[in-house]
Image 1 (cartoon, rainbow, N blue to C red):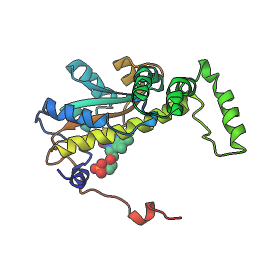
Image 2: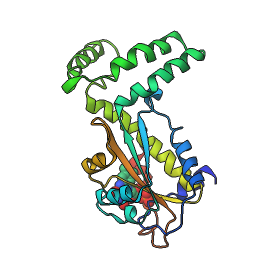
Image 3: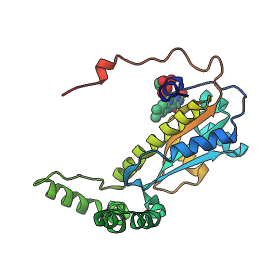
Length: 231
Ligand SMILES: Cc1cc2nc3c(=O)[nH]c(=O)nc-3n(C[C@H](O)[C@H](O)[C@H](O)COP(=O)(O)O)c2cc1C
């Protein structure tokens, strides 16, 4: 499917049929998801395909039993956790050393990432980071964060949301349908999937084949001129 056709074909589906989603379709979508651009390439995301009937049923309940979750053939939970920098950092250091990356990039992954991705107990490192960023920022352009755990979770969630979009478009390009959901009880989802305390649930994605009554109507957006600006 053409790129723009896949974008147009994607709709948020609230009712799926009983049609199975082939494993190959799911795998291709996971492959596309992990190719999403992400902050510092630290890949602080997880894609949890909930296959067990028990987990699925509990997840549907945590998604407030909404029809998009209830009728979905497959459910994937996408999470973001800034603490996962520890998982990718050794790979990234090896990688940047193996290619012709500038010395500063190697330094960045070896020294700066471990500092900037730590927040300390009760955000103890945040005030110091804030002072440095805003002090230097008085004299030259300077990123003013992330400083707190919340800031770092926001960074991780931004990247994970991009991966979600890659995922749903890849499903759409293969002739299947999705619904992204943030209507869920995050505490229950976290307990169910035994997530880390710093891990946030970004979205639950329902996947399947759209039923004829899968959408409420044609796709609707407010006029483009209201949301696109030039300065
Ligand atoms: C972050 C996010 C959360 C959403 N949460 C839900 C949800 O919990 N339940 C639902 O039915 N749709 C949900 N949607 C779908 C939106 O309602 C939908 O994208 C919007 O109405 C536009 O429709 P379209 O996707 O068919 O173009 C969500 C979409 C996004 C991007």
